[in-house]
Length: 92
Image 1 (cartoon, rainbow, N blue to C red):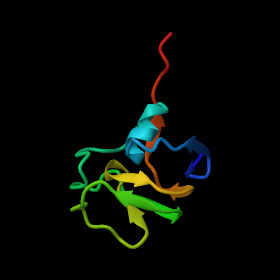
Image 2: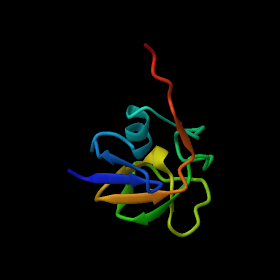
Image 3: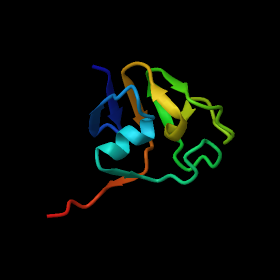
Image 4: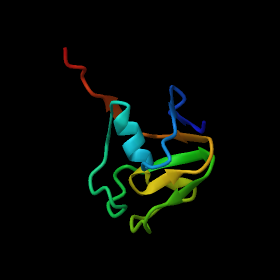
């Protein structure tokens, strides 16, 4: 199974039918994001290693090695950094 390593502290399993943002949200992470279609760049993070593919063409400016989790899918083991998030509170 393809693995996703985030900020050197979290490892998730890939789900091929979801965007990277949706995978993180599915695991209870609240990711700093806004448009969910690649226009604003709020979810931008740094790709350290691995491969992604875009579901749609992102319009936000991207520097080299930056990706937009809201519009990309994971294609190989992935290491990303600079993800701004918190975990959702668990309800009893």
